[in-house]
Image (cartoon, one colour):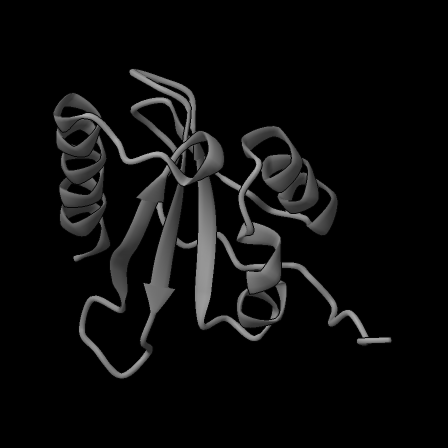
Length: 109
């Protein structure tokens, strides 16, 4: 049986654009169950701050995976945007995610 690491990811990027960070293990499990994908397997990587996950409500329901590399000036990078059963996002959704991410970059400086 795999031991679950303590799960309290630091707040890393601002919520906005219908996007909010998943901040506890129960919500990560709920996200995986609702979206029928495997985001919960990233639990250990989130716990040791190698990545984090966000929930997107609109323009379509998606999960966003962000990698974290503390050695970079801006340590965050969008790794994946997936929907129900790992469906790919629409172009509109991709634009919204990247607009949110660029806003976060400007706020980070």
